[in-house]
Image: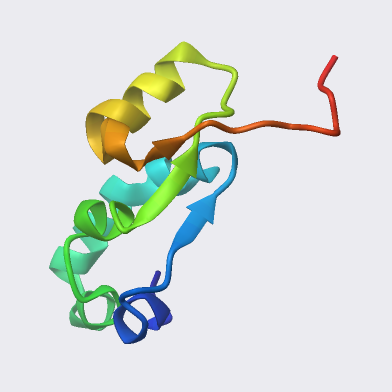
Length: 90
């Protein structure tokens, strides 16, 4: 996010597997850092939560609470069906 790729290539689409991994969990922290540190603000260029909405997230998280956070904070329109195929979790 902070490398500037998202800003330089606004039409590029990203799909983050497994609900985006740790990203949704650290967005609040990134946003606080953006507000306090000009260098982070410059690197992100916009609110961390809004920037995250530029990504798509797969729904393969195996946890209803995590899925709820994604739908509530990122948006249902940003989710796609995910799969572990062909690596079945048992």
